[in-house]
Image (cartoon, rainbow over all chains, first blue to last red; front, side):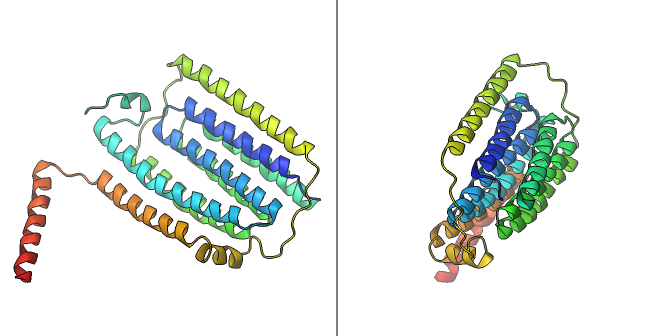
Length: 101
Length: 189
């Protein structure tokens, strides 16, 4: 007996909710970044679950693409965080409210 | 039966680690909890007959991306998150968003449960590395190439973002490029 599709979707939804709530609660830029990674992973889980239940490989290919996007996002996002830390000596997103400087 | 047991074990670990990721104030503890989420999700991918995705999950997420994050946390060496006492409306908004998303999750759960159970299409090849590679280099060749270009752009963007140049150095770079152009023109002539 295998767990039903609905239970995978429920797990994915719960992980996505935790990630979304984390993005609003965290004030640390790196913490927000990690919560976004959590949300991306929740979406990946739905892709793989649907790929399994339809017997199609396309969903897994899309997971591969999402992982590449996440890697690119990590490179650029962490670059922005480092550049911001050099200017302001902090990674608190509340300090990033000005568009100049 | 074993799959169900494994699913519930890994799902429990994943949710616990995800809550810990959000709850911890120290970003390093957050990062290590997130590695737990990634590893248990990779276990769930194995129960979904996707061994390739499980391996890539461990390599890229738990390996590359989290090493990068931990590296930045160590490099910047900032303090723990201070007390959560500002921006009250954000917490109200966050809790509202959480309730909304949870409600949506349970709606989807009940809606999918009501649908008669679909028999799993037992194709032997789906999920094997061979079939993924075939799909990647035949049907989805263009998206894969676009992803390659996007990764190149991300690398260049990251290098430019963190490169520290002051004004005289920037002018020097521009002068060097102008000189190179002049040299090339000279060679052409």
